[in-house]
Image (tube, rainbow, N blue to C red; front, top):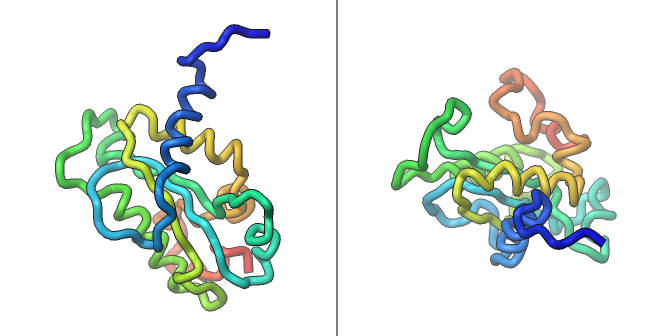
Length: 160
């Protein structure tokens, strides 16, 4: 048996994920808040394509993602006070879902966690690896909306 290493990738990621999953499950989008971090989106509706997700014994997210501080990809330092990167990201997802003809926004909830920036990508990767959320692994484009052509059909985000 290997000795316990609290600084091992998996143990660090689990601590952030436990904090996220221990938080409240709230309507999507949540009330405005400040900060960057990670989130999980859950579906609770009656769309046949997601029946197995809703009826599963373990509640699993349909999508997980992150929102990093502005400038982080270019080596930006700490987040600026008053920034709402994580809330903005959840609001963008809400708007995308609301455009779909076969899904209702009120069937979605989310959990989110404002996180010190260095841990954001670590937690997101762990969540994707662990849960394999359908919109992360089977639906291209939902998390990268800005990169899609403007005439890309919204229904394509949701595999319909």
